[in-house]
Image (cartoon, rainbow, N blue to C red; front, side):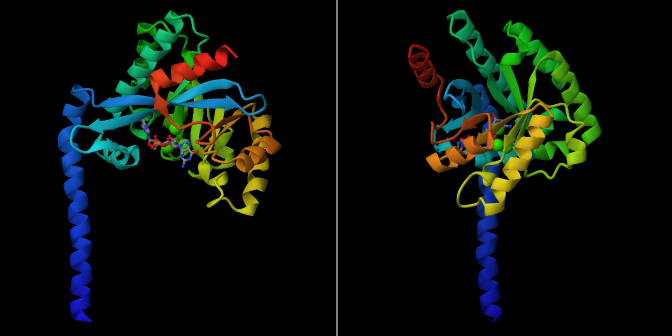
Length: 279
Ligand code: C2E
Ligand code: CA
Ligand code: CA
Ligand code: CA
């Protein structure tokens, strides 16, 4: 038994060691990656659920490393949230997103809003509102074209401070979306004090492998609450027609997911948007 334990721990140590080595390698290469433009954004469309209109997009970061190839944000974002690099990467993503919006306006497209992710570390930065305000001024954009997705769990950390910061942003005209709604255990009592425009339902309510029968009831309840609070509701992670029908049934407003489209390069998104506009 003793021998087996030793073996077990050796494997465990190896996994942990590999993980730490990998994390160190990522940390060592992140600055260079930013300087050398290895990061870029993909856009994933959002549609109105009632009439299938293209209504917006979410900007999602991608990393194409010269040796490791495409890496999943699931691997590097949590690490960057730990080591603080996320604030710089997010600012890069916001700039790239503003450039895209500026280009759409310059080219005379019907502009649609783009949502960017704002990580918990960004929200607890004192000058977040200044940074974002300067950004939209630099690119002469109406703030309503830039939606800010803030994960629900960020709200539970220091509610007073986040209500203050996000309240400022909302007064400036940014649209505030609560991301991953249903995972962060924000109390209903808090929800009603949050400066918010949109609830973005977490995928677990929608996806068949994780959704429980009770979830349809919870979704109906959330929809009722959202209506009453004047919030619109986005469902993400929609992969099948059945999931879409269930969401339509409860009166959800917007949908995003592989059923419609995966995140794609900006140029591809523009071609899609143009083809829809000319229909
Ligand atoms: P998120 O903000 O909840 O973004 C949604 C994720 O779900 C994206 O993964 C998207 O590609 C994926 N997705 C969209 N539709 C479907 C679907 O139908 N089925 C499934 N299974 N997945 C779908 P992605 O791009 O890998 O990003 C993962 C997470 O990494 C994001 O979750 C977000 O928390 C973080 N992230 C991505 N880009 C950024 C960024 O620029 N800044 C920050 N702070 N976080 C980011
Ligand atoms: Ca998001
Ligand atoms: Ca998230
Ligand atoms: Ca989400």
